[in-house]
Length: 470
Image 1 (spheres, helix red, strand yellow):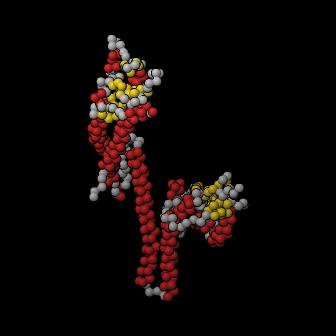
Image 2 (cartoon, rainbow, N blue to C red):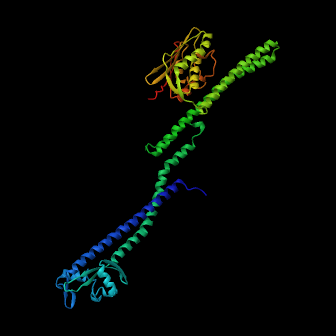
């Protein structure tokens, strides 16, 4: 079964809600109108009953209605609103007086019923052949020992007819309104969804080969513009990620091509020449060095890929950066001395941060390794750890060849190499600083680079210190 379109779903939902609303409003209005008409009828009946008491006179022959037949107002009242009345003897239950208008309705009660009216006077609705009528029963006591039950009626036919007309009005106006709302709602849904259709068409025209295209913004600053803007931001990130992947693939191919070409060349040369056992041994040793280079490159790639994929969790604990820096400098000092570089550390006081000690150790090792690579013999490398306010600052500065200003923003990119003069003779694949940046990001730290060609480089890592509890 084909699912309903969003336009149809919106129209159906809107129409269903409107139908429920109109039905509820119709029922509510009917109840309000019925109660108001009912209350009005009861109020009119009370007024008629009270006024009719003033026209009653009691003689030996019994009660009678006395009014001035020359007075148009009295005649209009008695022959109009007050024309439905009857009087029963409260003791015997016999009918004493009955108006001509009430007589055809057949409202005759037994003595027992009259006794009930006497004991519980009030209002009672009766159904007759001529429609409903509301009767008000009240007790009359002239003072001569006699008592009567007066019943005054008011027809409810007008109220019933008004309510029936209201129901008929609802029965055709609500469906007509729903039909009209259905047509208008479907048109409005199509109009509201038109920008989505345009966005869908524009999206279909975007492919991997042309990620520079963006969805058009209408300038309405509404939710649809927010969706288009968010989609454009996603496209921008996707474009950047694919560009980085392409750059990564190109750089990886370049990094792998050089050692593979060297391996192939040396292998072909060894096969073409007749060499001694010692010469073959030396050729195989050279090939092992190239294989070690490939192994280090692949290991670094796997580590960086696993780190970026979140497969290497960080074990956070308090770490003293000062002690960590002093320990690593002792370990690396022999490597620096072998190259003729002086390595010092300045960490006079403990500086504690919350982080993973092994990853922070790798961060500092990569910074030191990078500094040793690009510092010539006779140069100096210094490590400084200090606290500045609420931050811990780990600084590695060297007197090496420095970095060109245009290359500084790219030093943390994978496989990035500086100018040929800086990179010449240096080992590595350009992944060390990428890993440094990843470790810093995971520790909420920032890495700043200050370098000028010929004046050395300063790498500064700044991260929050751990505040002791209490």
